[in-house]
Image (tube, rainbow, N blue to C red):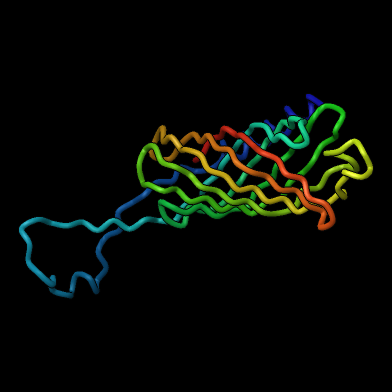
Amino acid sequence: MKTRLLAVWVLFSSVAAFAGENATTTAPATAVQQALPPAEETSSNIEEEVYVRRFSSITEMGSTIAKGQGYFSVYQAVGIRVNPHVFIGEGIGIQTAPERGIQVQLLTDLRVYALDRKVTPVFLVQAGMNKGGNGTFAQSEKERLGDTQLNINAGAGVMFQARPNAAFTLNGGYSLYSDMNRNLHGAFVKIGYVF
């Protein structure tokens, strides 16, 4: 079990290591912008910054708590920063607990960064599928969810920018697992690396 977790963590880390350097750049003026006279003459030169969409990767690990049981969680999302405030991507995660088996998650990840600063609040919504073994969450047959569940996570946190293309996150929130007959409510806390 520990060997599997280590192998998954190495795989996620290697994906993060091979990603290229990305940065925000200032776009040069186009020929149309140069041909048009300025609407109003000013004494200062105003340089317009255009955000270049860039590849972004988020690697997180933490814990999910459901039915009084803690689950170790590793999550990797790959996507694009549409602008300085919005990330959209797809993620894969693994959750495990002693004697509860392994769960695999495939999630669509949407994150909104409130400010374009070094420290900013983050709001996130993740939705997708959670595939686990029989009885992953509950011991009794009455409380047991099916093997495949809808998984929705909603939370908030904070991002600390370490470099122009690297940051750390700390977030937490609410988790819903549903097999469309029964629901299970939980919570999550994760720390992560973003580039």
